[in-house]
Length: 401
Image (cartoon, rainbow, N blue to C red; front, side):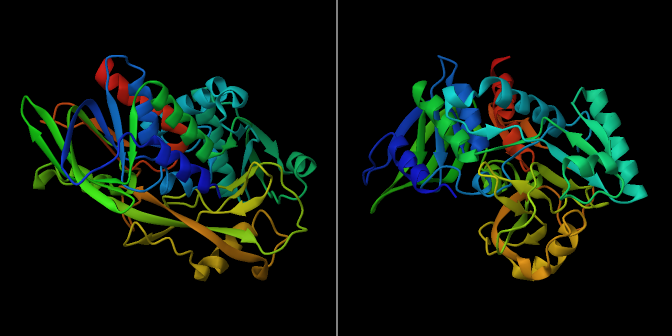
């Protein structure tokens, strides 16, 4: 995975050297959280010449959490309710990637490899039909394939019933996207400060917000205070902790930590697959199922699965989940044995619903009542990477429409 260049970039982005004294600065917008969504919001707001924008990231490098521990899939907009933010911003974000982020001009690496959602039973076939009709209503490019057609195209993939073919799905190097967004912020005189953890927020009516951050750089540390008219909470896994610094107790929010384990093949020599392969999502489960993805080097990996953990830092991959992953994968890729799978890495996504909650939870993006200029983002999980720039523009419209 991409690590060292991102660390170098983050250090270069620091806007000042800290000292032991408390420092105070004024900005029009402070963004908390340096994942891909926070970076996209900062990039969009920095394009407004009258804005002065700073982003605070508690880690020593940008995108160290959910943004760099995911499937790196460009989603087409298939799964979620048609009127949801997840669907609308996913479709918009996908178009932005393909139409505006020319790899040669921006350095953002992506490939429109396509995706199949495969059905193996009569019930799954009916779900694929529902997806197809919804996509047609949304003008999302999809087509149906029979099992015979699928076998001619991808002979390594087992399809007993049908396939929903999504040619506009793809893969993206999330780190190259974050580097690009960081560059946009810099070119527009915005600032990104890593190693700066927000420890207190205060709202003073008519005066805006005071953001206190514990800033680390090398062996030195200090408290910095940033005064701002507008505050954006894009803190990902920690977004509930950040907003609860401001919101009254009766409005406190909670996120749950859903760890997804990823798996790889223990050796090579397996039949190739040329696109993303997804099962029909399990019934009444807030997951898309353990799927097959390929990266930009055509390496195959599987995942994520879903298990709730208590800590947002519990990234230890769980080898006990290999048998369940094997059962899921072998339904569409039957060439492997249990011994061929090993755990690779894991990621954690923030969910607004906990274990046992089967209700659909949309992105939470809103300006909080009673806190003018405070835009709060929670539950930004999949398809957050695909939707990131669209989310940035959505937040920008809250301020500048």
